[in-house]
Length: 394
Image 1 (spheres, rainbow, N blue to C red):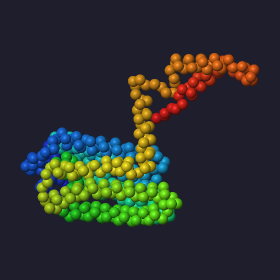
Image 2 (image 1 turned 90 degrees about the vertical axis):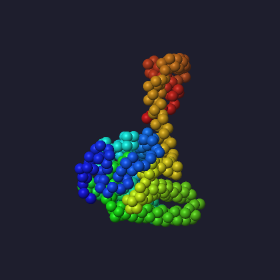
Image 3 (image 1 turned 135 degrees about the vertical axis):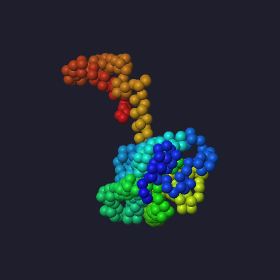
């Protein structure tokens, strides 16, 4: 595929054309030009796009913080999950913010370069998310099926290699296809720039690759479930908690895979419908199906919280800590929990000092040698210790 012609570049600049628009397919025209009557208002589309981006960022940042904060979750599964969460989070930071204005106005006004850059980041994150999911499935397969050899097989080197490959391979491959060959275009119905496969054959290869990945992951999970259930029946009475944790981990990874398929299958079906069969699609349907894939990262957050007990317990601690920090940082009515009010401290301290000074010195040798200043300080210390037994540190 050649680089963009001048008329396509001009179309992008004024918001009426597509990057890489040379095929004249149904997705290469605006809804008004195609004669479609849209139902979803522009304000609603812009709001949905903003909420999806915000949910991706906040939800996956929360996942990363919880995993890295807990020592129990900082294992090979946790690191692969962090890679997956980062792949889901980055589009919310680098891609989706540039789709809010096009969703509102219906035109891409950021120019060709930014369309190319956002296409690159969205493509890299999508493939990195897929490969991280494969890494999670392989890790879970080794943990359950080859439990006795897990420590020797799944070491730091293999985990690092999985995460590195999940990011380096997409970064290099899409840099050649997007920056070198100019395979990108603006989709006016979805209000974002996406990878242009340039024909039926490249799109067929991409869908076949995705289907093979899903098939491999599905086969691995079937094997994991079979072995986990067998272990649950055989050794449940000896170590029920460990067996249930393994089965629960398998359920979590399987649920993530199912959510991935649930959001990817409509996306692939839409691509086949438009590019292979060359059938037009209603702009609202295209908008819904394309942005359904963007919700995959948000679904993963709920899967972690709902199925992973260790993650759920650590998440509660993080929420409590953040809430406490927010309350103590309020400027209005803030009270220093480490220092009691002056009046209360003085009154309580004076009473303790009187009691201290009225002690029979003869019954306690050495007390008469303590200076008055030291006794007052000890009285204040006792007051602070008694009245404030807990101190939250953010």
